[in-house]
Amino acid sequence: MKNQRESFRNKWGFILACIGSAVGMGNIWMFPTRVSMYGGGSYLIPYLIFMALISFTGVIGEMSFGRGTRSGPVGAFSFACEKKGSSRLGTLLGYIPVLGSLALAIGYTVVMGWILKYMLGAFSGEILSPTDMDGFGASFGSMASSFGNNGFLTAALIIGIAILMFGVSKGIENANRFMMPVFFILFLILAVYVAFQPGAIDGYRYIFRVDPAALADPETWIFALGQAFFSLSVAGNGTLIYGSYLSDEENIPAAAGRVAFFDTLAALLASLVIIPAMATTGAQLNQGGPGLMFIYLPALFQSMPGGRIIAIIFFVAVFFAGLSSLINLYEAPIATLQEKLHLGRKTACALIGGLALVVALCIQGVVSGWMDVLSIYICPLGAGLAGIMLFWVCGKKYVMSQVNKGRQRPFTEKFFTVSKYIYCPICFLVLILGILLGGIG
Image (cartoon, rainbow, N blue to C red; front, side, top):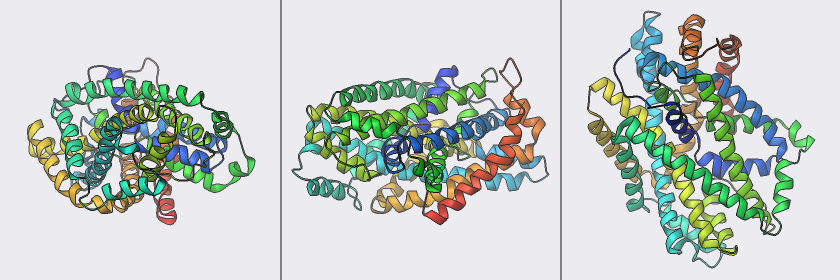
């Protein structure tokens, strides 16, 4: 398992890559909506609790599992089951999160094609040209139809695969070193701009108010759990594979804490931009997902002073956030091809990219259902399997030895107990709740 493999150059390269994998569309088009729908601060309280819990358990666990085995999910699961005399079972189970990561990446490629088109359309002014809400909706609808955005989808995929072809340090690390700081700077600029708009103060009041009724509502806690779970990218694939590129000298619990902090900061920044911006027009934010980003926000930008500049800044930032997540999703299947078929980096990237292009072009009209199935079933299942393999199969001695690498003082042993008996059941709770409620992520 200790094969020679690429690695991140230093801890901040690794942390920025993990932040990039976590910061994505959920932070931008889902988190502000849920803050708005579930009582502002009443939603933030359970969300922060679950962020702390999952980063303390699942994120640390997946990073440590990857580093300990120097492998992706297939190799890591095989290593765990080998201890019980059944490495083949582990290999087969390891393909679940790998194939899930590939399928998610393909769906995400369709979304990235939309974002690329809107980013370039912001520069030209095209996305702000409709004269009413129906026009904005029709524009998005024609793009999101079957085979409706072939060129931009292909371009977005080529950009992502090209970055991956440069490898871990020269590709993934360098790209995130640039994209993540720019993302935060651009959203900070937007937040400052919105703060000076008349009526924005009403949005801030809503974000930070605590409604006891909303706080007592089980739905608030359920959807806060889903948001935190999916935002931190615990799925037995992306975080695990990035961990496999980390040196033994790095402090994983500290890195996991920083990832959780910046992921939360990104979500809060999105809320501090979108909710007060909606408040300036008296609109209520009750529309999440693609409709918020590609219909309601362009219409809002059109009505604001300097709307074209705002649209440019927003969609450039969103493109960087999406691209950083996209390359993380593709990395697990690419690394698995390299490990199992002993292919070169560029060959593996080309094969995965070719397959992804064909499928992504064909699912453009049904991508919403495609992503729903994956987020409801595959992501929590992958996270749960990784948790079982590490905390139940590998055992406490192995887990604590891996977590304590790179630390000056031993990490608390409560980590293992909480991870085994609380985090692992939570993964399957997310799966069950997702099935019952039609998705909570």
